[in-house]
Structures are given as structure tokens and as C-alpha cells.
Image (tube, rainbow, N blue to C red; front, side, top):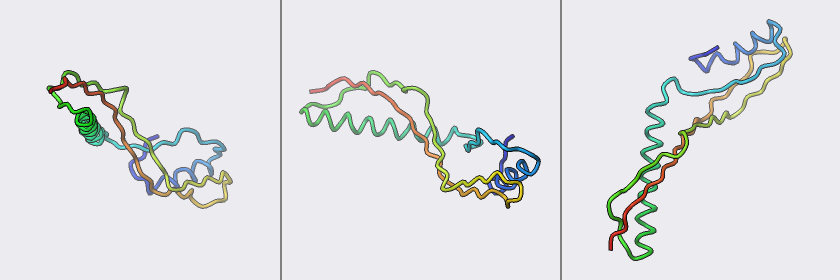
Length: 117
């Protein structure tokens, strides 16, 4: 089941318990369209890799030449951190409280530059 409104998650869970459910597995949160957030994570990963490469080259007393290779490592990922989610599986409880949390996106890249003197 997919829900678009986080505000009704607790009610849906309580309804499942009232209907006889005694086990709930695999609740996850995400974005309907992750493209923009993943692209931003990729952009930031490339910028940070470029910054580190420039710093390391400067520390060695050389410059960065042209970019020779850019590789995305693995798949971009996200993680949901829920502030609190208490689940009491008794049928006589009020809707399950679900507090909003945060979704973090990450991406990893490798940049290979030619060294310039």
C-alpha cells in the first residue's frame, strides 16, 4: 500500500491492527519523484570531489589538468530518519503516532584529472 499523506499513516496502522493485524513489516518513507534530490546529491558529490582534488594537487605543488574520467560509484541512496514512531499492537490504542523525519540522499563519484605543472 502506498500513502501520499504522512498525516494519515498512524490512522492506517491503527486500522490494520483493529482489523486483526499483529505484525507490520517494511514500512518505508520516500519521495514520489527522487530525480531532483538525487541529481542535487550527484552535483554536490562532483563539486566536493573537485574541491578535494584541487586541494591535494595544491598541497603537492601541482595543478589540475583536464578531467579525464568521471565515474559514479554504486547507486545513489537515501535514508529516512523518523524522529519517533511508536507502535503498540493492541487493538484498543489510538492511531499510531508517526513524527516527521528527514530523508538524506547521497552519491559517490570518482574524478580522475591529469596533473598540470
